Image 1 (cartoon, helix red, strand yellow):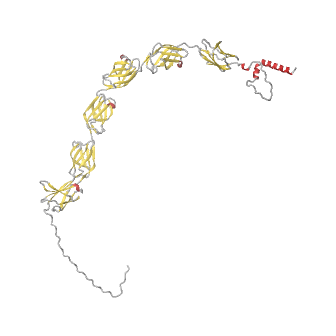
Image 2 (cartoon, helix red, strand yellow):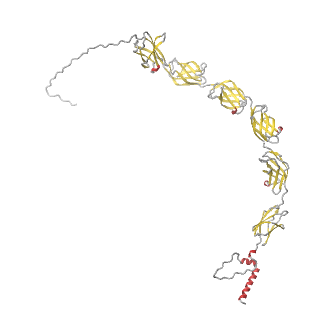
Image 3 (cartoon, helix red, strand yellow):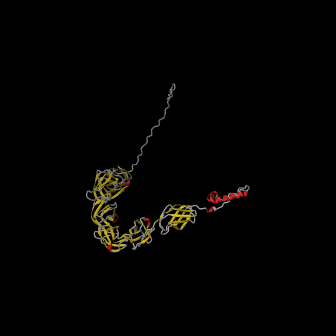
Length: 603
């Protein structure tokens, strides 16, 4: 056999082998681009492949699971697996299903109407596969029905029970609406749903939509009522018989559909509408809230209505006191609010510390004066006490005059808070009791006691305390004259008045000479020198005996008789006295001693 013949025979045998084992060929032949051609180095010729092309080889599909595992006709089911191809067919219960979408790992189909539970089969070019799971076809429930609801009317927030059939036990599968507004479902059973009417709801029918079952509508209309609410009272205060408007919403439009009480007293309803009730304050009613009861609805309370009666006063105590005293006033119909009660005395406002319907406690202010107490209750009137309250003034000494006084002289004390009754006001000077000559509310005149010494003036007012002066009253002894020298001096000559208690202030001392007591004509003499015991003045003119008077301001006066000289005193003429001249001594020379000189003494 030639070489060519042997080659052809080998090729033919290889071809038959490939036809007999295509799978082995597919594994032997690599998939991908041809190997590169190396230039310059020859290689063996490429193999010749006889049979089906590699691109047309298919793999058998595999089903792993079904999602979901149950459902109603019309729902979409996903078959999860691998090796799925376009053109694969899906069978369920022996019937072919239209394929919605295919990817290598998922196929989506729709369960047809009338289908029954079974398994899925996927048929493709590479073979077929059947699911291990059985898909359970659930038949849809019957559509719901609504047979009624209660109550048939209510305000937002009211819970409504809707009766019927075919409701879901799962709250989230029951959808209830009214005029398109979704209502919250509070509880659910197959025959009853409980819903709450929300804010903003309007009259309408209930629509119940159960997931997968359909919807049903109520035959009757639910009446959404305005909320039962009280906004205000007009007026908020008044006496018995006042007609009060209660303004709000949710009232019964008929008079008989509303019941109103004030405390435990029933009020007559004069008019009614959904937004207003007119009621009358009954006799013997007391301050409190109106209670409004609307037929078929709840009871609601209003704000406080203050029933006013004219106040009366019975008594007050104490009857007198200093500023700051608390006064208790007994009476009736004062109310219970401090802000509605005012009190005053002689036009001055009294702070109200506490109030009850039968008692007031007020405090006397610093600027108050004695007078009647008046009480005013807002919207009810005023009443006044029949007696005055005596406002005491604490005693005080503001000044006194003179500032210097002698025993037995009078001093005027000025101040306040003095009592004019007998022995109710007493005065002492540095602890020594003084005689009160007269007393008024703000002034006392007293006599300085003989034994008084310099010190403070103290005024004691019985039952009200005592007050002391800020400065001392200086007690001085009255002036006195013991001698005048000379006893008769010519006009203008220095005249020395000797005595006691003249003081040392020239301006306080006045010296006069009265030579005619009948007419009282006096000569003022200038004070040339002053000490407490001596005054020097020029001698007065005059021809007859008179009175020489010394007055010390705020101390007293003293006098003595005096006779002026008729003429001036004679002037003495000097007498010449002979001068004796002593003789002049003439010195006589002394002879020098004979002998040695005297010794020198060194000291």
